[in-house]
Image 1 (cartoon, rainbow, N blue to C red):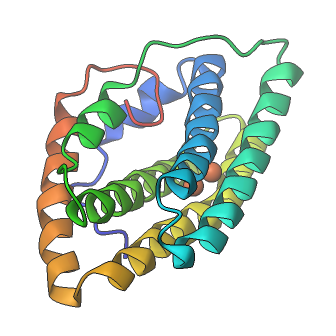
Image 2: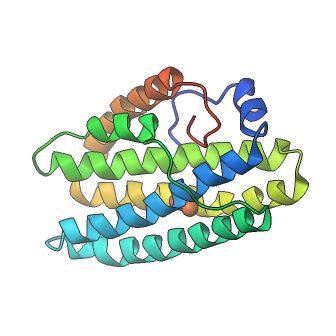
Length: 191
Ligand SMILES: [Fe+2]
Ligand SMILES: [Fe+2]
């Protein structure tokens, strides 16, 4: 159960596989950001020891994914390069409320939704990417992204009641769907 309000439409796969190099570059950025966010969160909340081990494990795993995607880029003779900031992640992060404990709760739930959307799209790539080797690669990443989604939800449940988590997750998944729908069409995992 990924808690996504809307499913990805059929046009996304067509766009995504139209430039696999560009897709892999975006994916590399996603994994790098996921690792960086996990580390940053552990620095921001030294007061919350229960976050440390899950975040350390997450950071390590995302860094491993980053390295794997870099390998895929290199295999295609492509280099990592800068990318314009993602509107999807930027707008979602801006929906995080200031002030604690809302800020931490929202950050965990937004992270859970980003993981869920990655998972959904990796599944689509695993089934429909014409490069079968790459399709298998995405098939192999699916389970970790689904697990990351659950980890962030479990952490959210440590700081809020089941009802409070459900209510805010409902609101944020509504926002996620809108942000995704309004994002400019581009060759991105969250495009
Ligand atoms: Fe990842
Ligand atoms: Fe992840």
